[in-house]
Image (cartoon, rainbow, N blue to C red):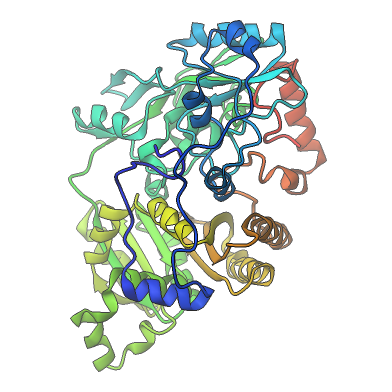
Amino acid sequence: MKWWGWGDPGRESDLKPAFRDYLFSRVGIGSRDAKRPVRPPELPPANPDVAASVGGTSADADRLAHAVGRGYVDLVRLRQGRLERAPDAVVYPEDAEGVRRVLKAAERDGWAVVPFGGGTSVVGGVEPVADGRRGVVTLDLTRMAHVLDIDRTSLTARIEAGAFGPAIERVLASDGLELGHYPQSFEYSTLGGWIAARSAGQNSTGYGRIENLVVALKCVTPVGEIVTRELPASASGPELREAIVGSEGTLGVITEAVVRVHRKPERLRYRSLLFTSFRAGLAALRSIMQRGPCPIVSRLSDEPETELLLKQSGAESKWGFRLLRLLGKGAYLRGGAHLLLGYLHHAEVVEASRLAKREGGLDIGGSAGAHWEKTRFDLPYMRDTFLDYGLLVETIETAASWSRLEKLHGAVRAGIERALPSPIVLAHVSHVYPDGASLYFTFLCDGRDRGIDLWRAAKEAAARAILENGGTISHHHGVGTDHRPWLEAERGRVQIEMLRALKRTLDPKGILNPGKLIP
């Protein structure tokens, strides 16, 4: 991964002229005002005792690669050459015994330990926080990356935590299987990271979130190893596996997991529909989820996001869209909302389209779905290009029940718009349930002068709006350092005390990922 941005250094994102002109006319930027860095920032000096204690490396390249995640603030700090902290050492264990040795040494000598997979956290989840300890060691698990076993009878697979998404799918595909968990970070994130952050993937409407896919796991803690049993279900008390899923490396280090896999479909069948408003699209999507058939993929863009997507794809100039205007259906293009559905079977597509049409949907075929599937992991590269122009670009996601969703959408949008100068605020629904759905916001504005201050103001405004309108501070990005200030307001004092009690039990000296998750 680029040290200063996202992904493959050889890949770039191209902004179509109509899209670029529209965007810059809205936010007031007309040229590349920011420059990509030419050299890595200087790192604070490392404590040499850390590497000696845990057998790790203090090489600058390793420390830099593990100093931050990939959120907006992380990338701005890298570009501006001002990293206030970096791990003192990085260790690459090759098995669970190696993890145990590092935790034992860290407890003995007083080091903080940050578990690390792909490093794609956008909420400060891998920040090397010492929190009063003598130093920080980052525990990189990517050498523990094997698919250990595939149970073709039970349709499960046992996989080490450091395995990256593409490698998992390549191995499973050789048996005609897939895990089917495709977060935006899929190409550069790991199974352990997905579990630790309670991830959701782009196919999660049909296959379930990561907690629905995890059958059992192994986790090394400072007081011993947690090994949950491989069972389809159990009533033997509370499901303690759930205490580790979403724990963000604060309770233990996940080393492997047994996950549910699926027979790999030949392809997904997509259908796109346009609605005259986001409200109408929400009604159609709720009807589909509550009556069936349930889609594998579902994405509903609000009016501003639909407009921007049409400009970036160049669809406005294509004959099909010109025909819609000629037929008097321009309302679907001016202030309309786009719904993308993906199904395994053609009959399901037909039925879902029929239900959507009853809510006023206009069926525009399947080509948009095929284009989305081909380019769905490209958006983080576009963020790098936006940063080249000096834009502040960030995402915030939440979820709520259907009865609260439309009000929540309006409140979060209004909060962000009040906090920022002339912003563009986009939103879509990307994970859907019978009782509610997620909302994923992207916002952009001129960030050349005080981008991080504006980012902080927008985050605070969005968090207030979310909590006041029945949403969650995170649907799938996690808590990290960024959302930690609002966790108690969402969970309540007693639940936070339960988390603290778990922390004291499993990590009595508090060495694991301090400063994250738990207020």
